[in-house]
Length: 560
Image 1 (cartoon, one colour):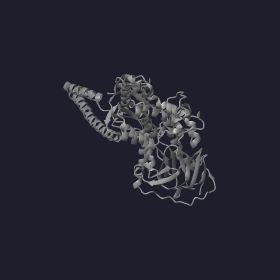
Image 2 (tube, one colour):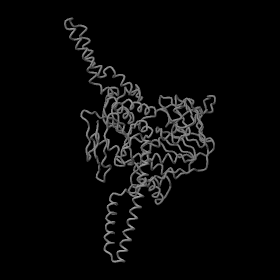
Image 3 (cartoon, one colour):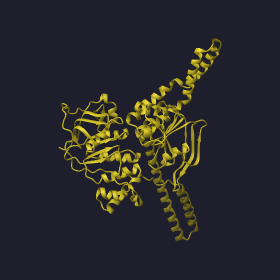
């Protein structure tokens, strides 16, 4: 037993966030915490680690080492090199290695009568050093560093100079190298590309300790989880992975609804019986009828106390993209694209054609140019050589990766008025559909959470007539329920979609084609992500290749 959570309740002063959560974590367990945003998943992890107060009991086994990954790296001042931070978990082993090396030097120059004793002592220390994995340090570091793709340039940088995403990556590597008994992971895939996520899945398979994970990545949860705790539903526990949880929860909800209907039917019959008995009692002036009616009413009251509540279906956010008139056959054509960012060549003679109705997922490792390509297509400040043509009848609805607002002090209502041109009454009606009510609409856009920002952006986007959607990481910061609604809307959309996502479940549900960025080229495959994973067996969709003649430099896209 690593950790036992017993009847844990958390209240921030405005009602319980979660209530009476109980489960046990043993070595080898991979437990997923699921539920809508705001139900307390991250808070529960903080309770386990001791960063939040709570009511109930959390017992951590004696000597159990916990490793906790936050959604973002902790804000700290650290002037050390990254490689020194990653070596920190092995400080005692490095010290013992230094002692062994010193003994080797002394044995080379000591007298024969002392040598035998020194050799015995050295052998004893060396055997313990080997047993503790002393000679495996470099292998362990290389395994984690290689898996998370922390290259030599990053290793030799000072921690304080790193970006937020790089700090989170280093922090994650440091936690894994510390070899905890229990890993508490809060959205571990947020800052990882698909290759890193797949490495993490393989790491978890070989990890001997226990894991409690919060994630909106359903594909990841399907791969790693052995049980699911539904935080939103008082910690109901389901054995199996995420897909099994979805099936079993649906069965449970259907069963509860049937039970609710049967109970209500029985209660209705008993209430009718009470009414009849009282009417008969009045007509016949018979006290016995009233006593029987009173007894049945008491039974009704007792049944209502323990009756199943009417299941409450979640209110769906009404995401439905409306099509304008159909675009031409060719939506985007890229010919001989060359793009250099700093000292890095992102694209070298890349070619691609996107046709009407295709739903294309753009994939590739972090830093390979996915966002840069999107910006070039959208005509942002990206400069390149080659040609990017967008069809004249193409009307794009664009959602960028960075959800920025020109005026952070602008209220939600003011922002919608300005972007859509709607009056206050219509703007309020639309905002209410996206769960922005009363006081919410007076919030400054700069104070919104990631999920609120994307809801607001989509609410405005839906007011436009578009036939093409270009989304850069649309699933960032939204919970599984909202992702599923967005998926449904994108599948129903009759136009063309180009999107970037690291969510393989999301890609599988939407993509008709995959475009991979690799070594400066764009390669197109038919099918979804699972088909792409077997791409050696999939026929490559041939793109029109032209002789590479340097065309006139084109900036900010083009039309035909």
